[in-house]
Length: 139
Image 1 (cartoon, rainbow, N blue to C red):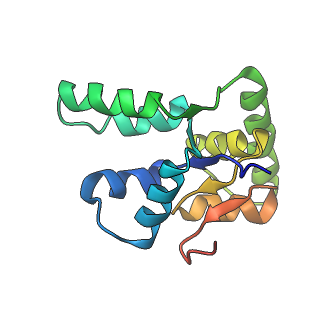
Image 2 (image 1 turned 45 degrees about the vertical axis):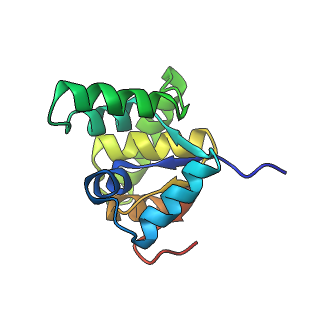
């Protein structure tokens, strides 16, 4: 059986792209990249591309990200995010729209989420979000 794709949040990508140091999250990401299991979406790409310093860096990163598995942000994903955010608010959890949409995408496509962000860990307490990585490296 093929291992699932893993949606990688910008909270993992940004430190990886800045330093490429051999920390546990970077090693996990490198292994997923080697196994061709990394997925992204346009929201994560937007977050990453907006932080590039030059047009050349933008073009290079855009090409690299485009080579990954793309999870479309369809109307159904947006609807799932809307419902998820509504349910989270009812439980007293205030989550940014962007993080809610990324979580809904991971849930919709049944992809574990590789992250280092407390918002996602809070979402996972109230929704069927599978975390591939949390701050404790719980893989």
